[in-house]
Length: 140
Image (cartoon, rainbow, N blue to C red; front, side, top):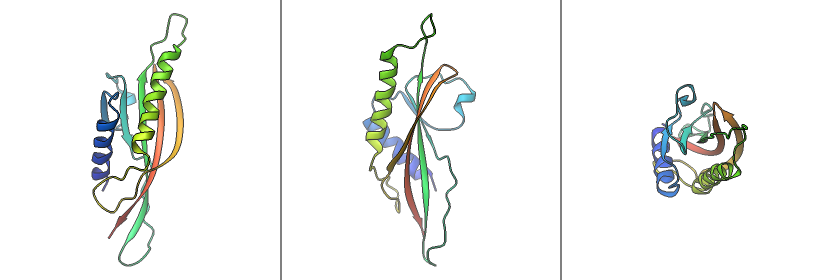
């Protein structure tokens, strides 16, 4: 049910966000070593609930989270340069731009709507920004 949406999002990001070095399905990669900088991880963080609308169709909301990940190598005093933060923020902004109002192919899916932006700084030497979207998918 999510593979077609994942594939469409990955294709869009690969085409538009050329600064991304790798794009993967999110699978708790933070618990292992992320070997690549400028990585995008696509996550579907919430269950999809399909309330009964009619006998013919149901529509469920799908939340999509893109993890924008940079390795943040600190200087000797523990600080991070402003240029690294700017590069990270620019990549995250390009993700928001690439996916705002993007309509995944694969049928019965609405356009993506940008919903939230959240920073999660310096998790194991990483700077991470969550860029969240939502859409609705119909099943018949």
